[in-house]
Image (tube, rainbow over all chains, first blue to last red; front, side):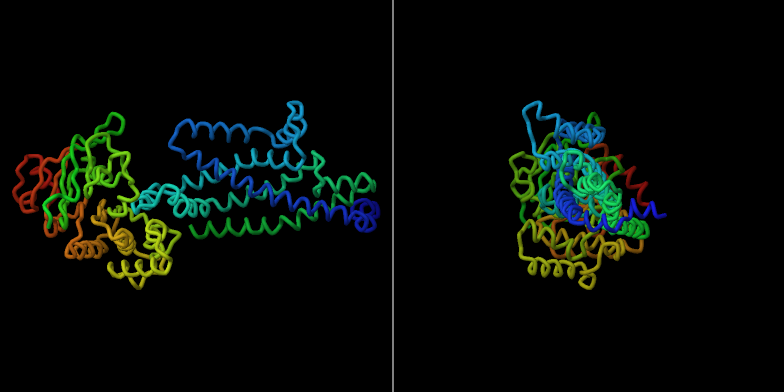
Length: 223
Length: 246
């Protein structure tokens, strides 16, 4: 017991590592605030291109989505950050992370939005077009609001995954929560900072998990 | 009543791949006329209707509405569609908007009316179909008949010159059909031009100026309801009428 407290829940270490972890936590929040909207907007773009009336455009989005869903995100990130410099493309860590997340999560968000758009009956768009709304207005005011509502649980679930994936940024030395915690661990020779990081992730993401659970149950009972 | 037709369909053709659904259809509708299209399923009547506001692209011929060929690529179809209302079999109300929201959407986004004016006009249109007390209800809080009347109000709010009805009562429980037909009767009294695909033969007989019988992508026969129902000239029409009426 003494051993566990000493190595995992050591109050002295907590007070020492706290400022570093807090800064890491701040960076993690910034990362999430950057990559989640980027992924959503990218995914929406992919989904809308997938509805294009040009077959070549539809095919390209299928290839894009398949490719980046099959490409492990960690490999993608290391390739962009450490591989591309061999081609003379030297991106800062934060840019590499954002680019990797754009490519990876837009493929996933794209599939979620596609399922949403396809869940809205064609009659909806026909009714809107018959009143003179343009294709863009029909998508904006009639199709997307219904599409998003129909796949809200999947959107939240995917967002949760993306939020957790930001810890990958630690491999390119971006000082986010996991990187800071691991640094504190190596300096203090103690696992307490890792436990602290886990607790911070939990505190941050647990409300999202609750929300997901609520809308999943809510949408089941309303159908 | 002006003599030149407001809608003039000329030699209209439409194919889905190898299947030819419309094989050169000519049809003229004059202002204030109520024209009924009847015929067996698969005869092309719904396709013909949907070509009249270009929900379906035709493969040949022309659809002249109010002097404009709407099949021409250069035509601004969104502008033309404001003047052609359409009512669908399955209502197609927007489920995420209230009744007045459904009616007001095009007023706000197409005609660019301010919100207050759009809602006022939406309520006036709902009043016209007898639903002023349901303005804030959502589609899932309305009966099928009420939903279809909201859909009619949505078409009327833009003050169209003509309304297309695509089997407007086919999805309704029998006891709800009457309320929709009543609204259509009021519209006719008010002089609205209407082109209707429907199986409501009794209504056609009583309200239509002209009945058009279609079969296999052709117009087989057209004339006043007394003629088409009472004294059909073509064997194919006679056969169809004798089977539907009893």
